[in-house]
Length: 336
Image 1 (cartoon, rainbow, N blue to C red):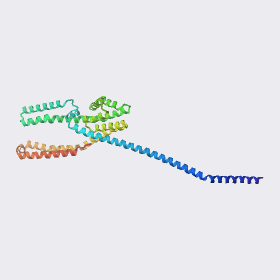
Image 2: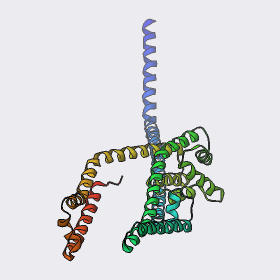
Image 3: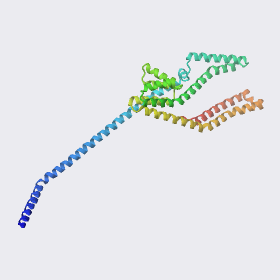
Image 4: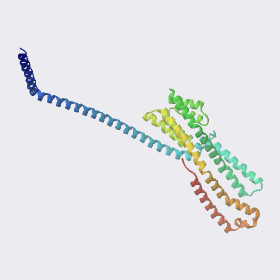
């Protein structure tokens, strides 16, 4: 009975094994085909996914390229406009008066210059000077001195603006981060800023009120404040209005750049101060020596002023002195 059971179990096992082998043999091709199909489907899906990623990457690159090209074109247009504006501003007396912060017209400026020239002319005549000397003094007082004063006031006002401008940009950055729009940030500087930044931003706000856009109004600020820092500010506003971006971050970076430029300018001035002092001493040395010789031996040096050959020597010396001063000035002045 036990032997019969083992035989039956063995027969059933053999039959099951044979059936499984026969089924595997019949279904092997289908199983392999299904595996190959599944592997092919996975490869196709992976390829489609890679193609989708590659297409998205290409689209992003094309978008970045278009945006970069748009920014470059905008920068070229702005640079061209600024160059034209700089040429026009540099030759305009009215713009110089505005840059100096003077509220007088060109007519008033000419009248004041003429009055100064006439006053100096009469004063020189009363002092006993000759007619030629009086005319020269009047020309200097009526033409040279007023323009020099205007240039000095322009330079002083630009330096004050440059000192306060980074602080105003920081205030604008914090205002924009707190949720205020750009126009409100500009009005805040126009109301609470320090001079002369407050006056220029007030003009900017007034230009907006008469219909100009913010980038156009910022570009016009360069007319009154011909500084590269103002040009940078106008470019940042123009790019942000065209291409978008984080304006507060851009203004914060600009403020940091302006402060670094100011530190670099101060460092360059400190390093070149010795050269400037040497140039001043070398330039003044001939005049000092001539004055000392005149005090000790006036007859010895007066030949230069009385003899025609002395006049020729003085003229040649003046030309060479001018060339030397210009060369030294170019050697010790640095643009940052």
